[in-house]
Image 1 (tube, rainbow, N blue to C red):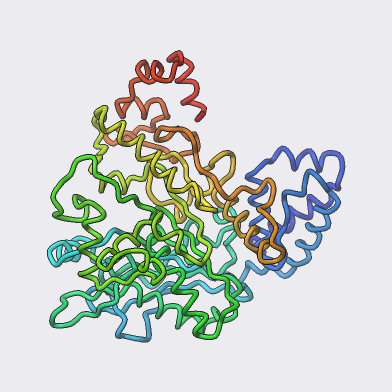
Image 2: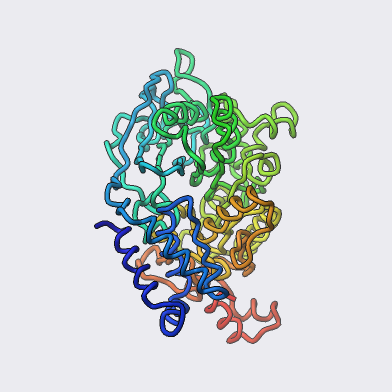
Length: 492
């Protein structure tokens, strides 16, 4: 018996405990983590959403749901699930990676599931011949499929383990490797004139075509997810995927987006530098050059908002988001390491200067402001980059809600609104943005280690390491230094 059987036995144990006495108290004690493990089991029976918000209010109703779930799990469906995603190179050999080798995707099918998760890998970009040559020499797997392994193991939201992936573990998983270096926007092939192909947008279209023959045509939900450049790629491509499926005769598939760490700001750099390579170039200038070099395409609805030649604006989340038709969930660290890098704030282990510290704080404020009108968002006040494919992605919380839980609530809100136009469900938040003002003021942030000693640092040690002046900051806030330290430790 597989993992589903274990969950079945746990659920049957709950049934035996009954609606009164210790059974109910024990459930309360276990809190959010146990709730999410229960949601993992519910994902196995997709037509049966288990309503955990009803536990406290109506135990009889909850027990009826658990009985139904136990019955639906009956032949252990997880037993046959393969744990590896297998490589498929595209049949259409004209759609390629940068070096002309065939593009492709990794697939793990989940027979009987009508949910599909397509993940776009990230990995920066290059925008001229010189820095693309350097990229090819140093990061070839991001420009060529020639050395890709035959299988990959899914992690985070691509994992087949309910403990690691409470809500999506039983979906059909597709990992699309990034080998076009164009933020998934290019539409130009390799030729005598062009040393490299840039076909990111076309790779996504071709993968969709092939997957339709492998079961995607019967899907109920397609979640296009991605991290970093892949997160920006989601914003650029989610509507196009929906339109493609409609044109192919599949208008009933609900297409949604999940953009992780791809919501960049086009703000002024902390220190302006010449546009030499991806790291030193201001994001606006890099994309401006890149879009011409890649023959990049952006969604028509966004393009119409800007003058000709200013399509680069559509690569920035807060500018493209209002033009999107498909629902998109935005996951973004308030202090994203990639954003700080392109803004020339380099945290090299030396205490930061006051100007840098103020710049970092302001970045958090600006990012928070751009997310205020985003319906579904998860923005922890942490210094990090990417999250949804990390195996610790279940640990991060904003206002007591984890990311898998927030995504589950978002799924339910979309399901409910399709059904009867109800407002978001009570006790199931989907707009989660930290309000504390410093990097790592959220106690659930990923662990930070000293770059030189490798030792773990707590919040206060980290802030001191960054040059944070407790006395001065306490004075500014009108607090005693000891009180400020206590607030920092608790994440308030």
